[in-house]
Amino acid sequence: MKVVVFLACLGPVFLLAWKAAHILPWTSDIGFIARGADRWNLGANPIEVITRATGKSTLIFLLITLAVTPARKLLEIGWLVKFRRMFGLFAFFYATLHFITYIWLDKFFDLHEMLADIAKRKFITVGFTAFVLLIPLAITSTKGWIVRLGGKRWHRLHQLSYLIAVLGIFHFLWLVKFDIRRPVKYGIVLAFLLGYRVVVWAMERARESSEQRAIANSRTSLPQG
Image (cartoon, rainbow, N blue to C red; front, side):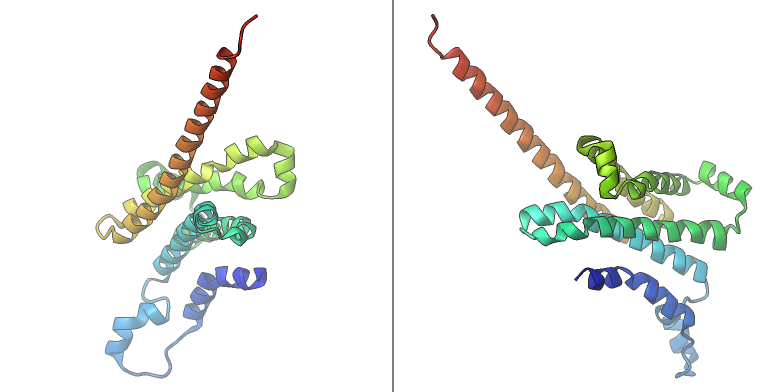
């Protein structure tokens, strides 16, 4: 099962590789090629196609990772938990490809231009911030790091994934500027996933408070002397 899920997670890479190698030898219809080139190959701007594809895949895997807990509790899909780490690492994998595409294919390792982008273009700033925050989460994703950090500290560290997902949504939203339908859809999904966690947290706090009041009341009602 894990092998199947792993290969499915590599689907966007396989699709990009197929597009890069595909030439459409079976048609001479120039109009068809012009209308559908981006569906069958990397089109006139391959760097943009790769950048968008890897960025979209990063967001999707971030949302899938965050969806595991609600799906497990609301839909009772317990077996999803064993894939959560894989989904998170694939989010980092696609974020790394996204970053490499930017620094290599787009900027050709021009450090001055990249620093200027980070300082002046807010979608680059939040995107770079999100990528940097992902690094410690990927490094500490193993069971050994859970033991080293302790469960509570590890859990607090990995709550950064909420902020990273929010930054990813704004990165996408500020990038597209006009046609914001896709980032808005992702934002709605993220709002639901984060809202679920807020509701669960509030319910747990209310229950703990109720239990503490019940204990206090039981102590005051005990006979004195």
